[in-house]
Image (cartoon, rainbow, N blue to C red; front, top):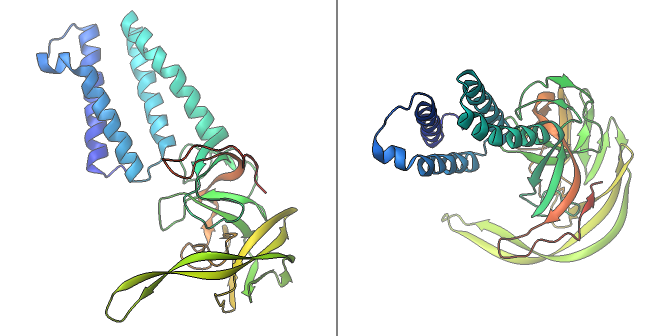
Length: 314
């Protein structure tokens, strides 16, 4: 994010607008009339350009809020030093809400939208959840050692983290701690040679879309009917439902979780990029927090938000 030209340009532009505004109010400095007349509009344009950069680069909004709070503090104290009521009043109106949002989002709860079906059936695409940011410790940015450490990630928790290979938050279920032996055999999970209890619930026919690649390079998407089996698992005092495809064959796999790392999987076991393949082991400092609550579901921009699924996450 910090190397993105759009982000650098928009940040420099916003700082320039702030500088011009301060100079206008303190030293009554004169600048290009076109800039003076459109200073507010320029600041708005640079602000939205920065938001676009953060959005497209999956940037850490918490870190940006921290920078914004620091800049607001500096400008506010400039107003105090020069006894300028305009700067103090304007900055105070920005600083207080920014600081409140920063504290709430960085240290208490952060909203997050489920982007994929890897945690079906418990979490669906479009679910908006609240991530508990203080469960594992207090920290400003997504990745890094917490300023203050609290609890360590535990079995069965639905965790939100940033994988080492991609700066985008993932959500999975934690099943392995440092030193654990993890086995996945015939769609059954073993932790330190003990099977995770798995009770059959029901089977449901679903239409799934499969992609086939031909030797010519052509890719074709085909809709097929598939039997999906649902099971109840119990781990770490939690009971939750997992989803298995009857059409996919799993080969025996085994891992040993290294020191300072954890093993995570999706509840949609046959359709999840997790520690079994792409994600690998997750370092302790890469966890953001636990997924505690669903507060809204908004499946598409043309749909109305729904609160029917609101509640605590198992």
